[in-house]
Image (cartoon, rainbow, N blue to C red; front, side):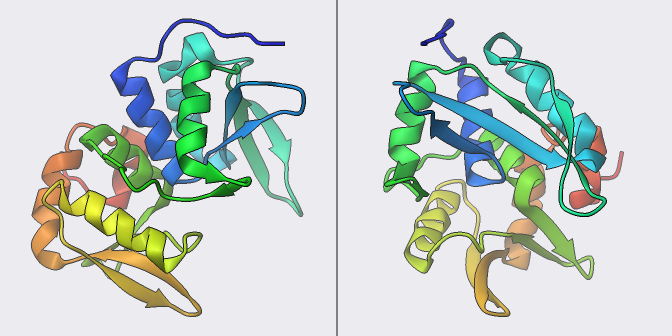
Length: 195
């Protein structure tokens, strides 16, 4: 059954794109024609999941729920309703069920902030990464191109048997400026923002 509601705002589209680049995923259920979004994080990131849920509230199917993962870990997740605009995003990011980076990816500060809150990390207080190990090298090059359009310089960095993106130190002030006031309080530790 199709349960489409109104149109997504630009903020919501950007949030969804950042989520798809990060830990979220879109899917089309069997016998359905439109995609839904699943957001699933560690329970330790409850505030972040609640923020996403509130930002997408008119599209949310049910409130976030706690779910036990393997071992003693707990996840906190929710699903959206199916929506034609989610289907458009799904078609640009997925091929045969596999997540890919579209050739025409456009990032804005909101999508970058959400992606960073999902997959960003810092090491030794000076290196800042986007953990993009799930993507093939060609897709990582597309991500670099999209980041360059925002004025950010990024390199592919080998991480054991995988690859991720590392911001050049010269781009870190620009990254902080782009993300200023877009990182929610519970996630500010990822860039060590000072009040």
